[in-house]
Length: 122
Image (cartoon, rainbow, N blue to C red; front, side):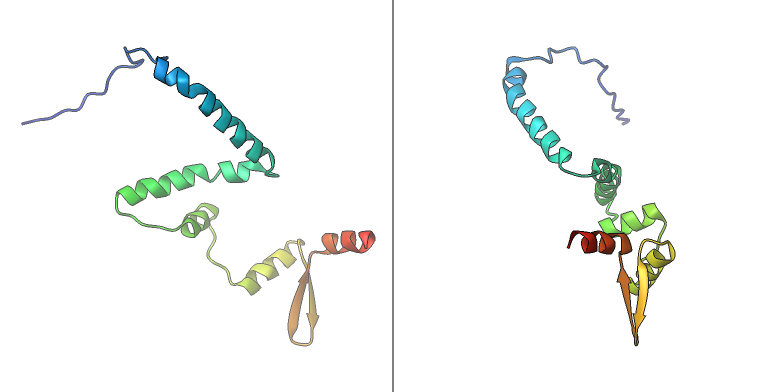
């Protein structure tokens, strides 16, 4: 016995703008406006939106019994291994994003532009 699933043709033959759908339109519009307002408060909303395909892939993999964490996904996407805090800070200093200061046996990392701005304001 061969069962072959055939999808329905698009567009659907039934009415889409039913009374029930139209009644839910104001609530959907309000929710969308609220979401747009929240997104407007994020300095770079693409940071949030760019994660959606990864999250969908994670959920799809879970259906296939492949379990992973968000950290593992983002590390794989960025092609980085999990660095230690010291190596991460050293890399930021090497890239010029932080200034490394050594006092005795301890390293201190300073965000120099932020430090200068706070010094001017204070």
